[in-house]
Length: 139
Image (cartoon, rainbow, N blue to C red; front, side, top):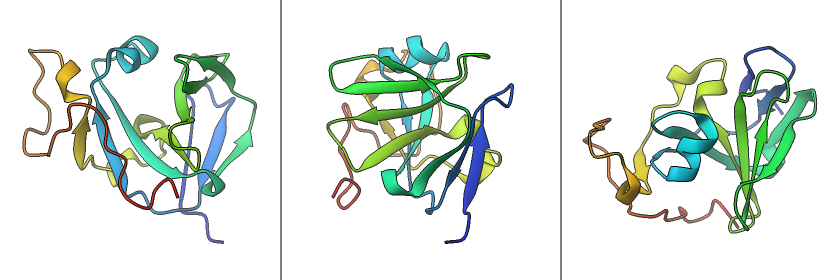
């Protein structure tokens, strides 16, 4: 299969490859993403688990909730991925860690009910107060 996309952490200790199109991309406004990333939102691309491959290094895992495990670089702290048991066939990858993040514009907002009241980003995109998993992504 042809390599579609690559990315990694700031220090280069972790590298990954995604062998799938980047189609389900969302700005997440939840408080857990803010605390985990140190940012005001996190933009995620959801990909099939079988299309994601670690190329270099082993990430540090952190269970941020009963259903979510987040993956970070133990050296530089970059937040790279998230697995949720609520969607076991997919993996969420932080768009900011892609080598070409400009190729992955968001198509929606999730957890918009938790948005910081002073933040306006991509106001033309549809919003979900929680997250609705698009059909076919977790099957």
